[in-house]
Length: 542
Image (cartoon, rainbow, N blue to C red; front, side):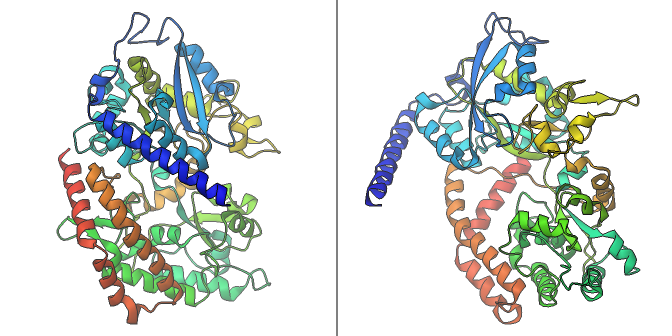
């Protein structure tokens, strides 16, 4: 144990030394694309395929997917795309638990830099830091020059460009975009309820928080299983329930990317909503559900797979999920999606929705890349319909078929393999299961559970109640990011801890709320909010 501690200490010292050297060297580096080779080369084709007339190799580092081949070149999609483009990718895919360390080591040791990071979940703070130091190239003009598909999407959706732009005015990464028309994937997890039990109780689908309470109480008392083990609401985190129901209490009005701030309805300034009256009323409602044994008692600690097992056994009366058909097996077809519930003060808003800018750090090109135009063209294909079809659907006749009405779908042997789930089966051909991919996600080509008919029908029930404005993640200066990280570690952790304590009744809303609010303010909330407001103001002006 002593030797292990000493080894860890030596590794830490080495990393600090490398960071110091990197920072020192970066002082004299040229910022942005001027520090990189963006020459096209005689072999490069600006339009059409192949992208290059002479084969080239580009190195990628990214997050591996346990369901996909260890070598991504073994995946049918990437084999076909190499034939189409003339570009071979040297994939270095790292497991999710090792990705952060591997990525950070590459950023302090230039010899370890790949040509690009693909699905490497590059943090916003790192994009700004290493972009300003010249490690990542500036993409503003290069996108317009070499990426017509992405350029078109940014022109049609200016909020995406605004969300990608950093305080220095530069874009350092390529995004994952959810088609704004694909509301089901924007909503993600939805509220689901057992329709057969609704019918037995002679109830309609709940429209209000009071209706939902009555349904939960009804299935508890009816005991349809005759074993006393029905769970009125089952899930593996209170976070999902809070995200889904908070719109009924008027908070979270700018979507999922900001779990603690939204827009003040009166001023449109940034608001820290976990200290508002609406948030308090939501906690009071959830405490009532918990106190009445209407929420799974061990929801705070239960594992996801355990919840899925309970659902498959027919014990869960309602849940939050992208679709129970993908989690609860055959019994999942008994569920129907719920609308946005109306709260006690007339609030009715579906807050559980994300931005079309689903992720900003999905693809980053480093200064080591000697084939920047070719790399950009390689990536731009996946912002087109043809690229999305290839990435998500695979190859016609091998993985999918096009029907007479123009609809495309996976072949029966892909969809109905008795030994494998759809994700497991399709992962033999492509690498989209697991998420994080840059490109565009469209309803026509994405065949996850969000595209199931029941998911689309569920979305129709609440799509008119989605906020008109949904914020992407904000970008911060290096100084703001470092300060915000320190403040968030205290403030947000405390909010999360107290949220669960208020729901269980371990802390009293009546007696302890004022102390809770004052504690948050004493943790530096004013500084926290100043940073968030400045970031929001920049976002609006981008």
